[in-house]
Figure (cartoon, rainbow, N blue to C red):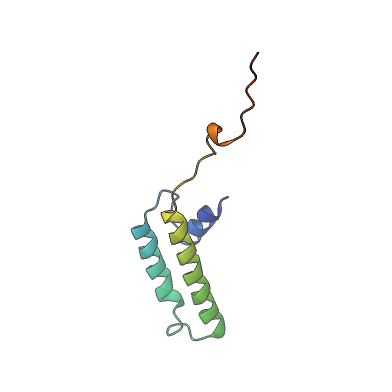
Amino acid sequence: MSRLAQLLTRFRLPLETTSAELRKAYYREAKLLHPDRNPSSSGAQAFAQLRADFEEAQKLLEEPQRGPPHPSDGPDFSFEG
């Protein structure tokens, strides 16, 4: 499973999600884990991890998909003769 798929699973979202849907899911989870609502030290750590996961997922969603390198990018192994 790719890192993006793992992060989207954490936010309970499908792979075909948009940045706006990710933001909504983040806010939904953040309300539950915010240190003001969950004052324990583990709550603050969970909230910080949620924020880091959100930022990473957002970055991966916005990153253009890279396919395999084009054949002309590699060495030329053609034989003549």
